[in-house]
Amino acid sequence: MASASRPLVIGHRGAPGYLPEHSLESYRLALRQGVDALETDVVMTRDGVMVLRHENELTRTTDVASREEFAERRTTKVISGKKWTGWFTEDFTFAELLSLGAPTTSQPIITLDTLLLLVADESQRRGRRVGLHVEVKHPTYFASIGLPVTETLLQTLADHGVDAWNGLPGLPTQRLWLQSFDEAWVREMSTRTELPLVQLVDKKWGAVDCAEIATYAQAIGPKKSMVRKKGQPPTGLADEAHRHGLKVFVWTLKAGRDQANRLFEAGVDGVFADYPNRPIAALADITQARTA
Image (cartoon, rainbow, N blue to C red; front, side):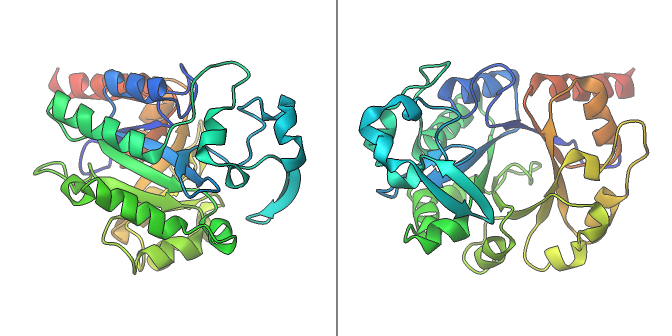
């Protein structure tokens, strides 16, 4: 394991391999399994509430398509260069979102405020600081339609005393990170906050300019195959990032201990996991082997 310290296990949208993603129970399960941090995605409502969802389109995880009172809100939009047809969070108030059901679960949509309170409470109860990675979805798009995602996010974090999250002695990477695929937004945030930033990337690693990213962010978030593919040696991306002072958080682990071990051996600093207990078990195996 090439990383200088123990890699972090980050519950990706909670523990969605077991429970519905972005639900309160999913996050609670990830915490019970012992994650170092949680990861969440945020989008905005029409009335400016930051809610936890992987996308702002509502069809996949709600019953909005069967609700006659909202039929006229079905529309087509181009968001971050992709064409979408459906119903969107920014066309609903938070109260209206709470009225929606879901195809397979009764889990309500929750807010960033709710998750921040959960993490703070769990950190105090468990006597250890739990980190949080907040991925802002489509920030340039939301700003273009008059929803001030950046200002709302920073104010929300300030309201929760986010400065107190900036690590503990001996645990410098357990903190609150802001992240996005939107490079322009991550660059903007480097001038707006001292919180650490992750540039998420989804391309061939040879096209990732770690030297340039290091001028405005503190970490990269590549998909796991960019760091190491099954049956192959590490690509070298983790080493290249580390040479430029960047941490490496990879997404998304869905398999078992072997996959986690391959990435730990490649030198990553953290993994986003749908089944957090699996990489946690892999790290336990490594620790046991070292002390045997």
